[in-house]
Image (cartoon, rainbow, N blue to C red; front, side, top):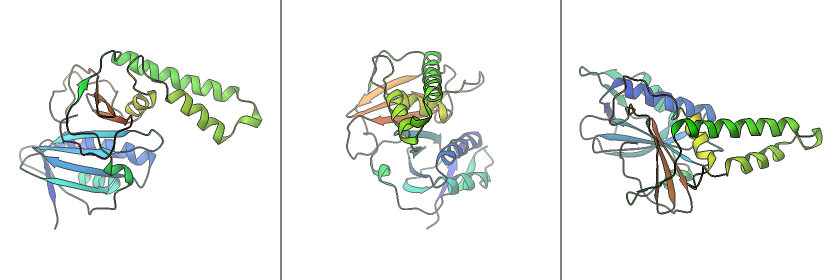
Length: 238
């Protein structure tokens, strides 16, 4: 049976499509898990190599209930071809389901999140990513020709991106993923809060729950497993 989603705001749907495009940039065959409930759509994706889960939300109208895995590319196409609604929203047909990759069954827990102190400010977080990227490039450039291999570069990357951000325990690869997916970009002054719309404050928060850490940004969340198992995630604004 064909399923449809009615986005409360066409701009939020477009921002979701931009997020999907970034996932596809890293994996042309990317799949995403969709969960709809309580007037919110949660979209979960896993960009290769970062070893994190990226989460984006958007507000919905109506009472849609949904939990499926679909092609990220086909969902982006469906949003691009959606039907405008009179109230400024957008109606989108949900693509056919696909066989979910293993990560789609390993999501953060429903509740029990507690705030983790010590997270640096947004500019400091961006600076940490920039410094790590610069270090990788400098060390790569300094490698002798005989050691300039994929294995050596992978080893060097794992060393750098496994470092934690201050005393938080959050690996740098999580904030690198946040920046690469557009979650750390500046927030427009006119942006409002709520649902998938960025908060004007641009603040970052870090939470922990049963084997997971979650970096919440104005544009979405990055979750990283620290040893959790198979669980479901409540669809709540990221």
